[in-house]
Length: 109
Length: 125
Image 1 (tube, each protein chain N blue to C red):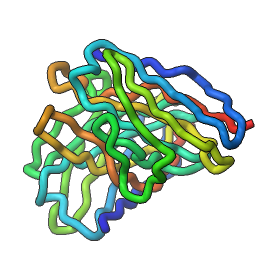
Image 2: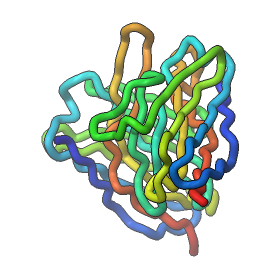
Image 3: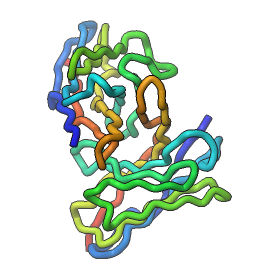
């Protein structure tokens, strides 16, 4: 089965750039989606299909992918960006098609 | 704009069956290419996909939960439901319903948007 690996936490100062990675076998051939989950709230998709921004998401949020690693980049980080970020893929070739990464807590210093 | 709302008991006794309902407003569960899904999140942990019911009524479950899970739909009420039997403390979690958007081109993929607000279910005697 597919396993997606994310760092448990990433710390960044306000105004700087945060980079959150998501690694996994063969994700180069799959669409990677990113969710933001603020404390006490439900997840919200911020990036779908590797790099498409969801409606209403600021341009500061960008997704990319190279080889088997997808990256969520948040530019000019704000205090309100502090949240958990989860990556997710769909793998129809296995019996567990929906796979989430373990989540990364973005800490704004 | 589609919105989802979970409802059901917040406390379930061990060995009993957890039952939740998701009510969909602003759309129909029988139209469009969607997987109406249940996803849970134990306290302080990551997201775990439970399963889905498709717009055509087809269901698919997480193999690790398959023996205990049933997802059903009621198109007239715009609702879909989750039943999880023989629960233990390990099933304590926030349970979310979500709409899975299906895309076939350029590659098969599904992502979840929107999500319900979530409901905490505690398994305890």
